[in-house]
Amino acid sequence: MKTATIAITKHGAAIAQQLSGDRFIKSKFKPEGESEDNIIYFDSPIKGLTAEIWPRYDALVYVVSLGAVVRTIAHFLKDKHEDPAIIVVDDKAQFVISVLSGHVGGANELTQKIADQLGAKAIITTASDVGKTIPVDILGRELGWTTEGEAYITPVSAAVVNEEVVAFVQETGELNWWKRARPLPKNIELTSLEKLEAESARFSALLCVTDRIISNPPIRQTVFYRPKSLVLGIGCDRGTSCERIEAFILEILKKEKLSFKSVRNVATAEAKRDEVGLNQFCDKHGFKLICYASEILKGVKAPNPSAMVLKHVGTPGVSEPAAMLSSGGTLIVPKQKTKNMTLAVARVSFENGETS
Image 1: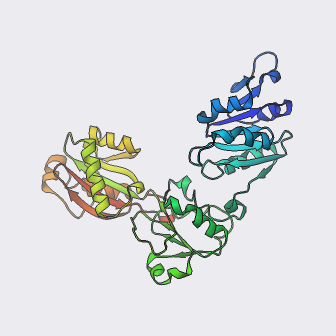
Image 2: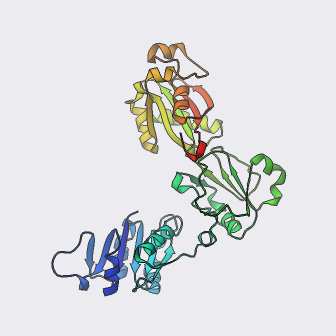
Image 3: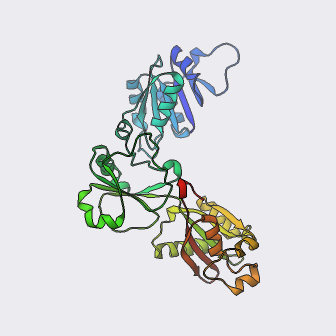
């Protein structure tokens, strides 16, 4: 997290120098001689400085009064997905206050870290943190999970913090998602989609961790979490374009009702390591490309071997065994073929809460 601290007083300057990241300090407090690295001295009004640095940092820490900070940042606010984390520290370093972007922007976590560093009291008012319950908007973020159902995040969050009965379904993904020392809150009930079909009226909302596309969940107020649980095994002819590869993948995932957001990586044969279209596809989406030698692929018992592939690649299969090896889990979409490529999908094993 790229952080900037802004200080405009003598005591504020001393506090800022204890913190990491870039420090912006009023020029009148510049000492004689050489200054420390990452300290920038400024003379402009604080609003002008904020306008300059607002888009450049993930978090802004102001050693300035809370009221002054609120008036300063008001003009720049957009939404929680774009705004930086805003934190305020008082001039005596007694309190560290999370002001803005507590969850999505990481202000709450950084507030606690700074408070620990300064020996101050962290002031965090986010209901799920105060109540030590599930943070609906960022659950599993550190595990790579993404959310779907943005329209329901606010009402589902309200149901969670108001201790209404909320269903929690996990079909895949890391098992160690609950990070707090205390047990899961009593109003969160672990269940399955099958059971929910019969008892959905009991629940106010649903939190569902799955890689499946579920068009009509049993509870209207549902937030989906997409863990990185799918591995794409791919075989393709030399020169197959990135566009062709992507189009076929999206076609098959849509047909199989699987979320593209849950793709963890791509696996293939060593002979395809330098395949331009395949590498372009992986680079475009940030997928790691894992390649296996033919001898290793040959040792995997895949359901749909091919004599033609054995002749040209030295293994009876690429897409299926590559997906199975990389996932350490189960083949859920057997080999699908088009003119110049094959695709298989495997689900990652999350035994003991870890990916294989």
